[in-house]
Length: 139
Image (cartoon, rainbow, N blue to C red; front, side, top):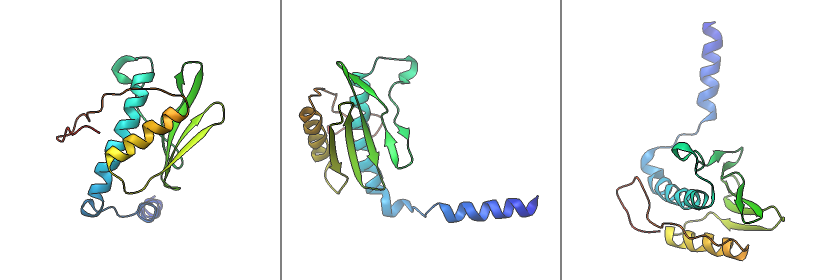
């Protein structure tokens, strides 16, 4: 039994890369705000469920997804693909808008996201102040 545990532990160490906080703190903070923007879109357009169960992003094989969101008589979803470094907004009609995940300000990401939604005929206004962080600078 001890031998199996040692093998299992060794393989786990090989799977996960080192992510020292000092080297990725800025990326993490930016990504946190980007996911808040997408989460607020989902919050605004999804019927309320106890304890905000309608809001989370779900883990996928390549990143995160909102899962399907109903808008008028259509469905769309927003996917972060961290392997391809892009965010996609996908409608049930087959229309897709893709944003490259690159070093841009939160304000620029917000504007590009809202423009992409608008180009797909999705109109949504969200509260643009981040939550549960010390810096409440609007997106």
